[in-house]
Image (cartoon, rainbow, N blue to C red; front, side, top):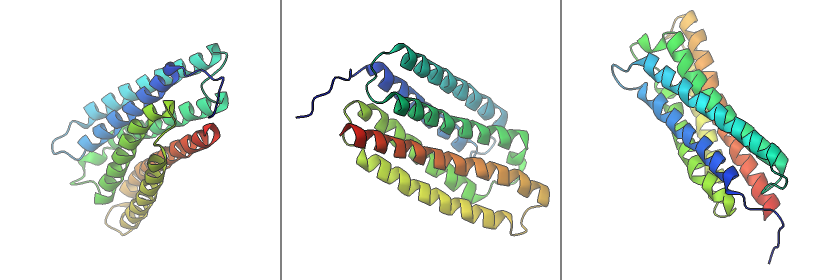
Length: 208
């Protein structure tokens, strides 16, 4: 039997879970952009609100770390996981902002591959939100990081096919530049989810 002197402070796990729940809210908002007649400004503004809430959660997490003498697992890993969860939300918010500011939703339709990337992100967000509460027991996490990495590979494929479409001559040069920036943020969000999963794997291995 493994013995530990680390406390099992539920506040850290609650903050991780709240941050991950915001990812689900973020990807659901991005999915609204595929709906006909969507109010893009409203979606962008709500994404910004969720991102601000995530910033507050990260701030609370850092305060909690700094005021806790002995943490549930390595202090550096808590910092890293909190920072990576915040990175995900930053990329999701950037997607909504760029689509609105660049006026890309005024196109007849966004590329199919862009919606495929958002769908991948939604699956990664839900997986992550389900996994965060399990950090407390460090059990049943392996399927999470394996699937999250598989989804990241799927997102990479969608990203490459999106680039092929963007440079096929279907769009004018300025639109290509705008959509390439959005595509990069989508791909960065997929990568950021993978980084969260890899960090959870590292923590689980250390604590096993």
